[in-house]
Amino acid sequence: MYRPKMFDVTDVTDMHAIIHANGFATLVTAGTQGMTASHIPLHLTDDGEFGLLWGHLAKGNDQWQAFDGTAEALAIFGGPHTYISPSWYVTEKSVPTWNYEAVHAYGRPTVMDDPDRVIRRLASLTAQYEDGKPPPWTMDALPDDFVRAQLKGIVAFEMRIERLEGKRKMSQNRKPEDAQGAIDGLKATGRPVESQVAEIVAKANKDRL
Image 1 (cartoon, rainbow, N blue to C red):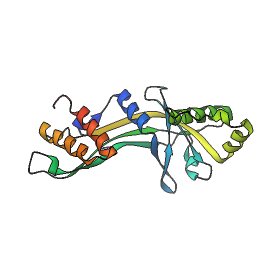
Image 2: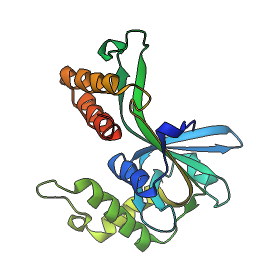
Image 3: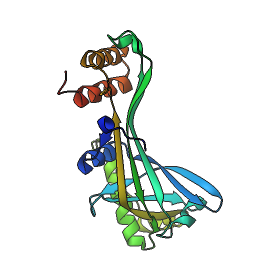
Image 4: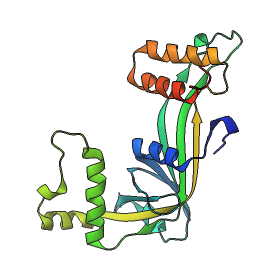
């Protein structure tokens, strides 16, 4: 990923925060039939230097057959993003751009064969996304034989992260007054995503505004 210094995110904790907040990833692999991508939720645990990702695919999705522990895969996590209008800037000679943040995680996926371990991972993944719901749903509500029957339709895998790349492009390359203009313009739209991006722009430029 192209990461100019002012946009480069190098702190692992910071990158993990982006992953936790945006866990629906694009998982990309390359095999004999070319490039393959799947869109799936991934669960991150603090295991090792860069962490461990866990997920599962439908058994009918052939991508899992490349998970032999030697072939590299890329998991892409995209955070809030939006169009930035030059009309929000103070600087007159400006062009449109796009603000976004993203993390790329590289590793070599391996298939998980232990049903009990897979069930524990599924419970953790569910708990992550049920957090805050009143009341949260848990797998305990399901009979054990039903859960184990469902496992036959998926292939679980884990991927130890060997390399992390993070990028936060949030108007750091603009003059402070232009960055503030972007914040004000985004907030004025009244749309949730733009408001999210406005908050990130403010944090990314807090030492300049």
